[in-house]
Length: 370
Image (cartoon, rainbow, N blue to C red):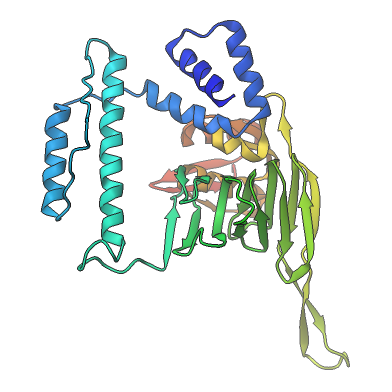
């Protein structure tokens, strides 16, 4: 099935796909929404024009010289075949650029492994205890873990895993939001630690949203099954089915007076987090699952306060929101942004609500209309 999907995607990018093939692709994407991000990434690369300013062989030779200077020798493989790309069309230029990128990536990976593997060189540094991948606000990225598991990181997110990853347990810690497509391995469970939940899986695809400061942690299952444990309540385990979402509210603190009432002392107690299992939300207008719409560069919000929306916009655009009054914070919005600039997004919001805004560098100041 995967071969067929990539064949249709290739035809679509080349403008050679038939109507029936496009319908087949659309139906497949509905059944497997995790493919949307891959398709978008490939499309961006396909239509991105990057001028080739120098000969590939010269760039590669310089790269080899730099590696030799670091004490790394690369021997040519037996029966090595040299493939030359024609430059008659833009597509071959694109393939040549992709090949150069692949060569640099593989060589760079080899250099990194040699530098971080204690056995590869006497002078090599010791491997760090943890590996960390993070994205800044306003950006998203995709990574592949050592076991082949693919992870898409949303803006302002961080994924950490130790050097023992994959030995007996595949274990990571997430801060922020990520979509996981976990390689199935019954002998090595995959464990994710988020803010107030632990998620255990064998092989599946799901989205986890756990940003610091958010009122809830969400686990949305797309395919397979996951077992979720609530922190501080280890005996409670919840099994999710496809298209189900687990919402765990942040623990709350309650202040109660200590009797007798004549004293001024107070007692702080912890209210257990509220746990709800519901269905994921499918937006028919956008033909996308709301919980994973960020992978398609879509920001969907439904009846959210300006305060809640501002938190999303801060991560989406890499800015900071400041409210000059409390009345603006309570304004509510419903809509979808698909590639709009910050200015365009604010203008669209302003059409439906009464507020003013000014942008000073990376700060958006919201004030009431006088």
